[in-house]
Amino acid sequence: MTKTQYFRPFLLLVSISLLLVYCKQEDKALKKIEQRHAEIMIIHDEVMPKMSDIYKLKKALKEIEQTEASLKLIKELEDADEAMMSWMHQYKKPTPGTKGLDNYLNDQEVLIKEVRSKMLTAIEKAKDAI
Image 1 (cartoon, one colour):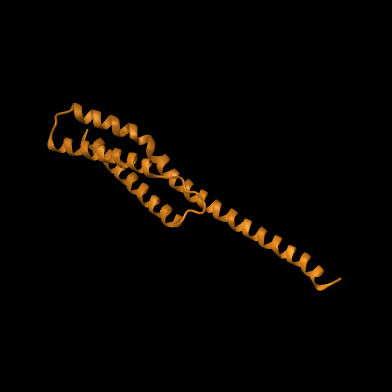
Image 2: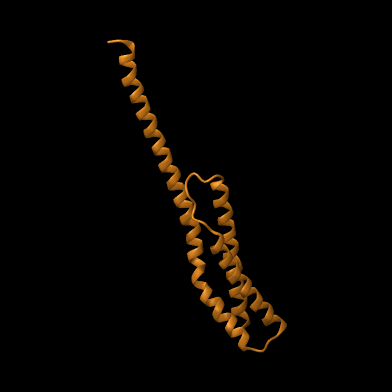
């Protein structure tokens, strides 16, 4: 056997090994992306049902005497509602290979946490006022 006859099977074995390692790395990256997406959606799913609370509280505040304080609370509830709607409109499920994916997911997590805070604060203030 010549050197090239030994080299071809060796090259094939190395190529297959590298391909398997690459596939495992891709699988890990995909799992990480899916996990981050799931974490973000858990926060969303936690506060999304509270949108009905916002609607009910706005309605209740509009039925009581309109004061500067009640109008301010209505505005805070509307702002919280708009923040959630805006976040949902701009959020795109991440796809592997997208440039800047870690930064995007970090930014989205910060944004949805801000939405959650805004919603919960507005709801709490409105409940206290009614």
